[in-house]
Amino acid sequence: MSERPDYAAYAAKMRHLAASGHDLEVDARFVDMISPRKARILDLGCGIGSAVGALRIRGHIAYGVDPTGSILDVACELFDPAWFRSMNAEGVSAAALREQKLPVAYDLVLMSGNVAAFLTPESLVQTFKHVASLLNPGGFLIVGTSTHSRGGPAAQELAATGSGLTLTHRYSDWHLGLFSEESPWSVSVYSNDGSRRAAGGPDGIFVLGS
Image (tube, rainbow, N blue to C red; front, top):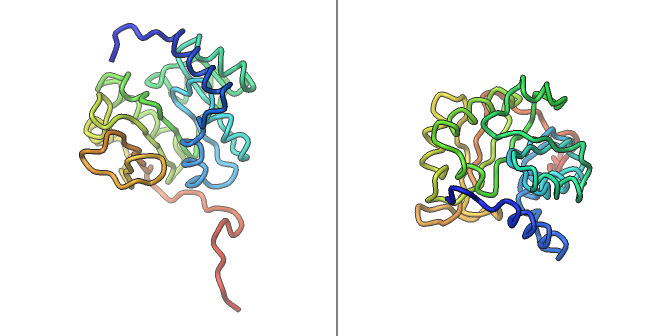
């Protein structure tokens, strides 16, 4: 990872991709698939807000936090600024969210786009612990990142130890691809202790009976 990322250039690149109609919602579709309807969702390192916007369209109560002002500026240009706050992933806690007038309990927390790679091992451990304290029973943390970079599956396993979060699934992409050690990308699904909120209505399940 670069010691001094060019965030202004990254923001400009993402603004261009959004304006050009590129598909920036694949992670949001994954999240929508496994979430109950009208889920409360927090996107850590939300970038230009594509996932938050897509989840809002699908009826979820989604918010995003990101520490980089130039990137959040793009999110606020494209979407409702009320959905976003300036905050580091490792700094997200109930107290910090309450101070920012955001909810402190979530059905799902998303951390995609190599956000984990920017965190030190210590910060990743702290982030997992904070997320576990914010998730409702049975809630999910979803981490999408490069497999062999800092913050990849090996580091996540260490961070999950003692956090209350348990790995339930791991894929090689957002389309449920089979994961192997050679996969360059990983999508890891961690579940909080307890039973998650049941989906309302049939939600794809139609039981035959009298």
